Image 1: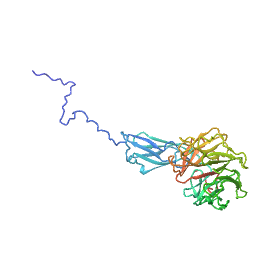
Image 2: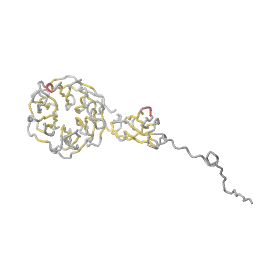
Image 3: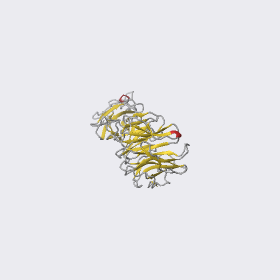
Amino acid sequence: MHRAISWGAALVVVVGCSGVTEGNPPPPPPPNPLAPTAAFASAGDGQWAIAGLPTPDPLQVTVVSATGVGVKDVDVSWVVMPGGGSVVPLAGGKTDANGRASATWTMGPVPGVQRIEARVGRLPTVSFGATAIEPPPGQIAFLTDERDLAVARGDGQDAKVVLAGPNLVTQALSPDGTRIAFARGGSRRAVEIYVVNVDGRGVVRLTTNDVYDGDPAWSPDGQRLVFARATGPRDNDRTALWIMDADGGSPRQLTAPDSLTFDSRPDWSPDGAWIGYQSSGVTEATALWQIRPDGTDRRAVPGLGGGDGHHELLRWSPDGTRLAFRTTRWQADPFEGPADLAVMRPGGTELQRLTMDAAVGDFAWSPDGTQLVFQCGDGGTFPIGDLCLISRDGTRRLRLARGVGGYGPSWSVELPLFPDRGRP
């Protein structure tokens, strides 16, 4: 007897020799391990920049696969949001072997937060932001790697060599921005102080002797110079501070260090009441002192003990309410290693650390006292040959110029060297 087969809702399935069940679609192919599945900002987000100028560092987006491997030759489009300036893709706008694509971003002319987007196919948009600030005022003078004397705008642009080296040692812009005092010489026995107009013309020699004269600093009224002079021609002869008129006349000794002490790197307070300087000994930490211009009332700068590291390069803010200096007090060994930049009140209160990358060279206040320029390194390492800018409270930092040397910067008011200066 044969049993009837009920077809109803039953489905007769025949499996072929290929192993694919007839009547069902084939399984999807495995995902492409090299297909882009994510994109993210890998460099350049959150920068500070000067309005109208490129950001200090390029933007970079990285495109990866599901396994986290960078995907090569992916098209990346860069889109500037309203008011965000302009962008130029690098390397044809495609990702490299590591999945990275970069672009240079020139900020728009209006200060404030600006944005730009990187778009990769159907992936979520990658957003970059940067904060544009007003172009810094005045002009900055500094020494290059070749020891030329150069002057740039306050934003670090348009640097011009106004006096060729070599053998320039230190320099200082006059308060009115028209002259530069500098030291020059081929050896310690033959370093002298000169003054030159800011355009490099009219060099006048102020000192003539067979010992070191250096570190000139202007009085607030531009009528006098304080400087360091060696007590003898030997390399290990100590240095004392001296004062002379701006034309080299009436030199007189200000400090009288002992045989193992070097007084150097002076700076005048903006009211003219004090001269600050650093004093270093053969066996002692470098300390900061201040003295009256008439040589009286010498005292240690308050708030900086002798056992908490080296303290160097005292610089008053233009309004006299802050002191900036370098210090090693935050290093693991406070008597070894590079120094950080710090500020405090003249009475030693409100001490604040501004940098933490241990690569700070010489520095100077801006004419309005809102920020400082300092010699810096790439990535916080030595050697240092760039110029960086940092706000007085340390919250804003950016790189002004790369590879310019930046030794011994000084900052002064607007100079006639840039008569056509305006907003970018």
